[in-house]
Image (cartoon, rainbow, N blue to C red; front, side, top):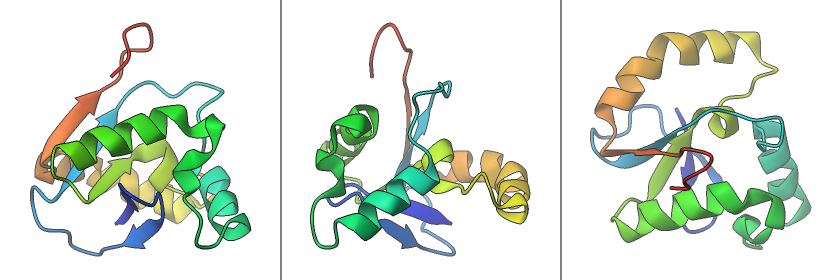
Length: 116
């Protein structure tokens, strides 16, 4: 399972995270939503620099900040943590999505006109 570190915005691959050890964000993806490839590109372009400072990542930054304040080191966002161009990864995530949500420590919901 690919998770996003709440302080750095870097990806971490954790095969079996402990139940309750990460938070998730549930929301409707828009055409402006950053994707896995966007995050990966920022991480490659800015090694050692905070990825979350990019202005295009306001929603992700808010999610990470909220999760960190609530004591979570990691968070999971479907559209960011799942490579939509990798069919097998999308298939695996589709099957595991419910279980990953169930095992999370918190689920934040973003309603576009209300914020987090």
